[in-house]
Length: 176
Ligand SMILES: CC(C)(COP(=O)(O)OP(=O)(O)OC[C@H]1O[C@@H](n2cnc3c(N)ncnc32)[C@H](O)[C@@H]1OP(=O)(O)O)[C@@H](O)C(=O)NCCC(=O)NCCS
Image (cartoon, rainbow, N blue to C red; front, top):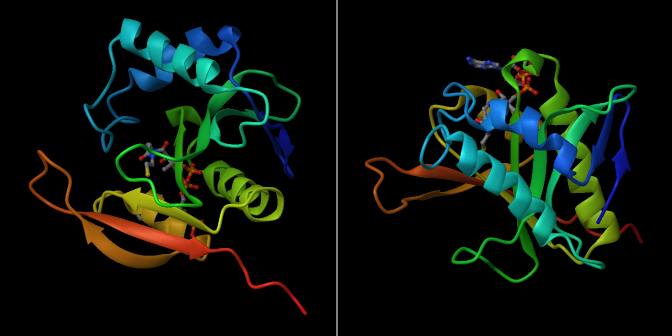
């Protein structure tokens, strides 16, 4: 389990106290517009948060973590580095992020994503971070490009009538 501090944010494990706040985020149709299954129902959102907490274990370096603004312990969203079953490659993790609507437009997702990518390459064996983005999701595409991720390929998921875009960034070569 990790806790990371950036210029304005703290990235920390989820706690049961986040359940209430997260229900609002995960049940918001605008926030969930590009997510599989769309907005969650309240019970599903509670299970989602509980699952993130259950997935933490000592020594486990990956997962989804709550984002808070320094000085306020309430979660404003999450950032995740996960190794998804079915689309897992060795030492590759998938970046994901989602913020409560009220906090959009401040560059928080970019700051959180930079922080976890640095963590992945400096403190774990991760060799490559990928992000799978809906082609219509302009803010997310802007963020992955600002992170220095490069378009790698289109990826077609079952049940979709258009392809998502897979972006990737590799672990930087060591300085000699
Ligand atoms: C994606 C998300 C986390 C971005 O939040 P954020 O940190 O507030 O990002 P910002 O609003 O600062 O926007 C990031 C960039 O996209 C740009 N952008 C925002 N809306 C845009 C739009 N409609 N069209 C084009 N660019 C847009 C911003 O100008 C900014 O670029 P800049 O840094 O060059 O100015 C937030 O929109 C969100 O939670 N969306 C729903 C969940 C989601 O789609 N998650 C991603 C799944 S991969």
